[in-house]
Image (cartoon, rainbow over all chains, first blue to last red; front, side, top):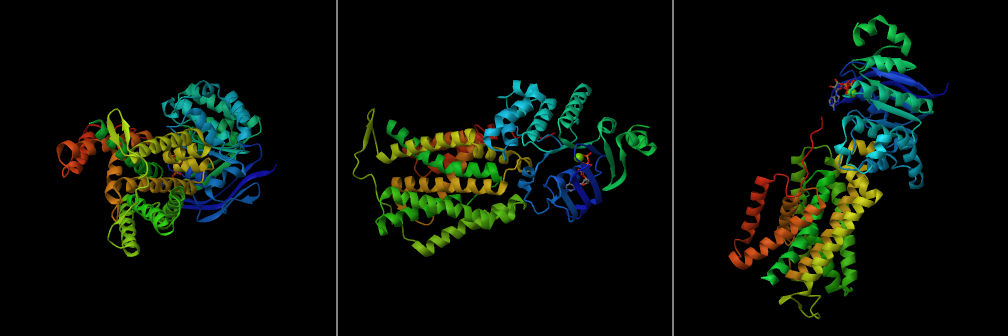
Amino acid sequence: MKTVLKCENLHVYYGSIHAIKGVSFEVGEGEIVTLIGANGAGKSTTLNTVGGLLRPREGSVEFEGKSILGVAPHKVVSQGMALCPEGRRVFAQLSVRENLEMGAYTRPASEIPGTLQTVYEHFPRLKEREAQMAGTLSGGEQQMLAMGRALMSKPRLLMLDEPSMGLAPILVDQIFDIIRALNKAGTTILLVEQNAQMALSIADRAYVLETGRIVNSGTGKDLLNDDSVRKAYLGG
Amino acid sequence: MLTHLINGISLGSIYAIIALGYTMVYGIAKMLNFAHGDVIMVGSYASFCFMMYKNVPVPLALLLSIVICTVLGITIERLAYKPLRSATSLAVLITAIGMSYFLQNLALIIWKADPKWYPDIFKDTAAIEIGGAVVKPVAIVSILVNLLIMITLTLFTNRTRMGKAMRAVSEDKGAATLMGINVNSTISITFAIGSGLAAIAGFLLCTTYSRLEPTTGSMPGIKAFTAAVFGGIGSIPGAMIGGILLGIIEILARAYLSSELADAIVFGVLIIVLLFKPNGLLGKKIREKV
Ligand SMILES: Nc1ncnc2c1ncn2[C@@H]1O[C@H](COP(=O)(O)OP(=O)(O)OP(=O)(O)O)[C@@H](O)[C@H]1O
Ligand SMILES: [Mg+2]
């Protein structure tokens, strides 16, 4: 299997706070890999570092064999990876359609209608709301928009930071179904979740983060049955 | 009365054009560019010098002053504000005030303190009569130019890719970066547009009032900033409405109440509006993120 993303010995700081302390992990082509961990473990910090928003003080991030650390933050997306950030962060004062167009900012304009079509197939609700301001969407719809927006750049690697946060169980199921469908259609997925049960059950492989370090890893199935993981993250 | 009203709208149109510079920069960079008024002054001197000393035709002189201000705006942002991108807003404000004094003093050295008299470029055009009111041609030109600018900018921000990217940056720089938008160059472009508009405003202002000195930009700058806050800072139609209302209030107060108190009345109205509508007339409520 080809390695799509390889992070080695990452150290990330916020000022003097040492948030990530030597994290290494890999994502292979076509996989769903999940990072799980409690609040403040460093999951978002790790994803934001890969996505170019944060710079590691030490360590390396390679995407498809090329280091992204020398790439300007706004150019990371054109390498072929997209990050759907924690808290959705849709552009509230832009319409749904405009949000999606922003997702395709680095792509040629001629390509946009086709990609929109694909995104609307995954999220028919977004098509209905096309002209509505994103700020007026429900939480679930905003999550769909944030994912759709990330897909507009046609990423080979899609990174999702807590897509199930704050959603009703039925919506969580729906979002996870879509993640699986996207993966089947050929997109590699790096998923950060607090909903460990859900995440582990769809993941090929998983890493457990604790206070900035990876303390456990394995296949999704193995970790679902792992005693320490069950105790800490699956309620016993 | 009608004459005053038209003159008010005309002065207000100039305020509106200046207010756009404040509002766009505030929207994107979340800072108050205190030196904006002084860019107007530099632009006015530039067009003045080209017309008077180099015999450059009026439209070309205006165009050159727009280019100079655009470059000046980008340079100010690069040198003075960009290094402070993550500093406190107080530090940025103080830097902006410093930049304002720097430009005024620079102008004092180059052009000296004694006022220059800006040429009346419409002196060969007769005054215009509208429904019994007699107004100077420059008043009508100001109103039309303002309308044109507003329409162009609204189309730009709503319809073009760059304009939409600007709105995205003004909402969330991190998310915009994730989209592949270059936040730094978006900020530069915003400063360029605002400063280019300042040159146009300076040209109209000096054509209306003729007197040009190193402090020419400060008072209109402060009033236009007031207009931007009045209309709702960050909002383009807000700048338009705020500017025009302010111009009308100022001219009417000057004509019917007292020319000394006109400015005080203008700022008084601002305070009253902000008491009832803290975000300005068209201001958007700042949405708290959950
Ligand atoms: N902007 C910041 N400034 C300072 N410290 C921060 C900042 N962001 C995160 N941290 C700290 O870094 C550590 C890791 O935070 P991070 O957001 O990566 O955790 P997380 O695993 O995503 O948690 P959650 O599940 O709550 O989203 C935490 O201790 C947090 O307090
Ligand atoms: Mg997080």
